[in-house]
Image (cartoon, rainbow, N blue to C red; front, side):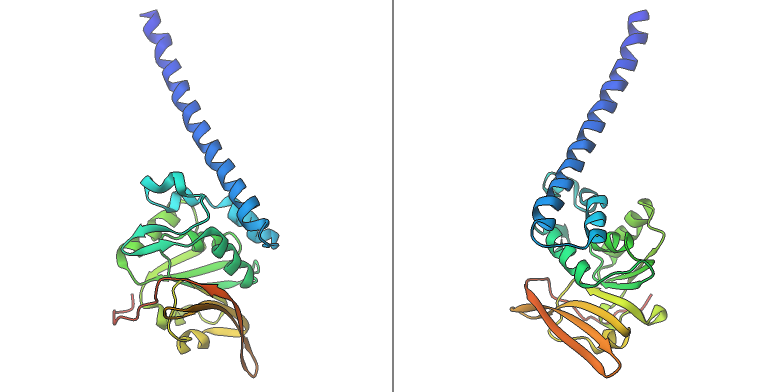
Amino acid sequence: MKQLIIFIPLLIVMGQGCGAAEANTLMQKRQQMVNEEIERRGIKDQHVLDAMRKVKRHLFVPDDLQDSAYDDRPLPIGYGQTISQPYIVAFMTEAGKIEPDDRVLEIGTGSGYQAAVLGEMAKEVYTIEILKPLAENSRQRLDRLGYRNIKVKHGDGYKGWPQYAPYDCIIVTAAPPELPKELLKQLKVGGRMVIPVGSFFQDLYLITRTDAGYQKKVLLPVRFVPMVHPSIPDK
């Protein structure tokens, strides 16, 4: 009996050690990703870098892709959608110039990764997903991870979320063929929108609302999934 009593605690300790080792390995991969693929490539905003180091991307990808979670590339998340390349997430977030008191709208929740990064930086984040299963999964995931400042909605991203407008920043993670007029209206004066635009050939734009209208700046060529525009009821 004594041998049995001693043996069981040893198994428990070993299991805890394996879990800690795996968590440490993932943390090292995340730090390496930020250092080599994001900071080294020109992202300078320390708040963005801190958020990218904190948010655990492996929790936002399917279980069978966790070993690839910290590769700097998009990964499939089901329903024909992807989680964006980490560098692009960081680039778009930096371009949005997020401030701690900002109210941010995201179009295209996906798995919730970009929303989590925004949630580390902004006061309020409102994110819309057209695919109901993704919206529900992301809502549960973000709630489980403790993001009380993020609200998820299943709805049509072209309509935005006028209930909480105007927004300091709008981040769009799917590409419409042209700038959505309703989203432009929901920017406050001085607000920024970061959005890919185009069909086969796409460019990432920074749109800034001014007293006189909108300033447009092309940032870089990109490739995003198309932003769809079905008729679904707002919820």
